[in-house]
View 1 (tube, helix red, strand yellow):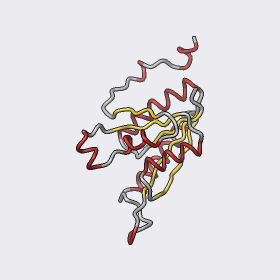
View 2 (cartoon, one colour; view 1 turned 120 degrees about the vertical axis):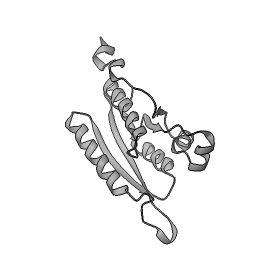
View 3 (cartoon, helix red, strand yellow; view 1 turned 90 degrees about the vertical axis):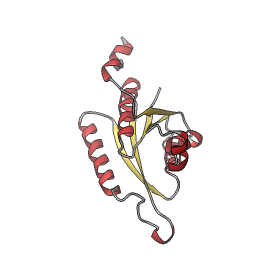
View 4 (cartoon, helix red, strand yellow; view 1 turned 135 degrees about the vertical axis):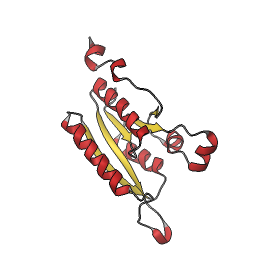
Length: 155
């Protein structure tokens, strides 16, 4: 079903909710998760610097999280991509490179005006993705006990 699941993460609460779904789907299908984080870089005079002041902290926290998940037995790897393009384009290109079956990401649920002003990674990803995208709202109240495990599905 899903051999390679891409978890697009920026370290936000919305991305964490998407991780719950990625883990569930990987368990059900026997697939692996590839956590991809985009370090978007500035262009022009300030070229080469990250657009986020706390980028190093985010990346380190994600690296630590993936290490903890591996210790729990989750089949996951962590990849950081640097680029000047829009992050959704970078994730889509990475999904193509990995021959991904699904991309999972979170959303904050900004309205249309805020989304237009702030830009929307998820909205753009839906247009450029080479594979299906599962969008998990940050406000989703997920109870892991409500989802069947692999053993329950195959029983």
